[in-house]
Length: 279
Image (cartoon, one colour):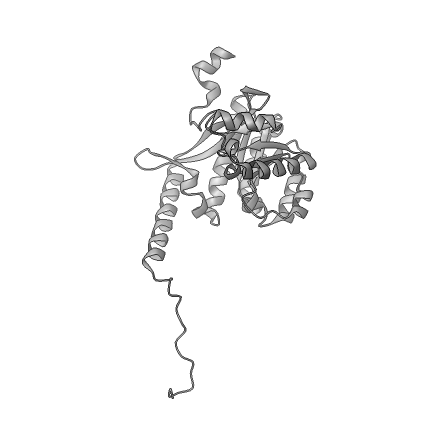
């Protein structure tokens, strides 16, 4: 029998001190440090990727502005390498502010541009984000109607009621909203009915190789029917070859985005010489 009346030692999680946990923790700390240094240096920029109409694939309907960082060597770091690590931190809110600020500047510089900018639902309550938006909209009355705000499905589900109120407020000013990565998360269809997104972007996991995948064809048709029911434009993400593009066009997808139509580029495509020649 153990002497004394106190409880024994608290059992430890066998994995909490594992080499894997330590490596993940170190990676996250290094990522946070890298992002913080890039933000302090203002080494941030947007990469632009076209979203094309299926009926007119040669002319973009709009562009998506994707946040990029530059490390100390000048290497471009895509969002997928850091966004999940900073998502729940204030650093994530600051990056959202920088994305919006650069997006609004791009819209102001080109009156013919329509641009989608990503944001987290967590930034709705961040005062600086709203200040950046208000300051930008004051400079040009046409910016609101040319701005699309993309919120990921998983982010929207964190605070669905706040997202609904936020969207209703800004849609009255002409701003559009896109539900990004649809199908990748766990959307409550009750909230989908109340959100009133303008654009639904079908996650790339259902689109890549769709011409040869009966399962993904079935799922994509179902997701497209949801978009139709709720009067949303449907965008297929991650379109990477002609056969997939043709199949999606045949089922009536509204727009497509992916490497087949253009990779993200930090040089605005509408400023490239060949774009000027076509104009």
